[in-house]
Length: 203
Image (cartoon, rainbow, N blue to C red):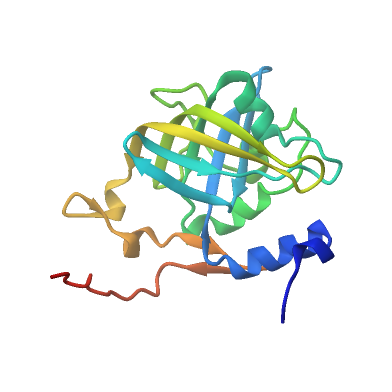
């Protein structure tokens, strides 16, 4: 099978990409609007960038009408956000916050989650999440225009909070964390199934 993006709709190539680029970690991003409403939404185009400076990126796609999502609007307004890690235990709540709620509605309340004050940024953290990264905006890169175009958000990590229950010997234990990843369609996976490979020894 050959897929040529020039011969496909944006929707068709999107579905092919999200089935091929797997598993994808989930950035559960909390922001706050200029009106003071706490927003929370998951994004699976998400990765670390570098440790110097410590930074992350995630890429929200535009709505079907081509407008930016509330997360992007809020970050453009105040330059701050928190990335909350999603363990399997919070999968249902995360999925609920993926709905397109009105800007005046807080997804924290809709999903029964607890907003808790951050130390370095204004947006609240998800109390129930075992790892939270408080970030400030480095830059937003607009990729394309209209529906399914994206806003690549790059942020500097100012502070990472880790629940001791997901650590072993002062390191994050991915087995204890039991985070989830996005696959194609409605499918997700868990990090509970793991294996190890030794790095090759170069001469």
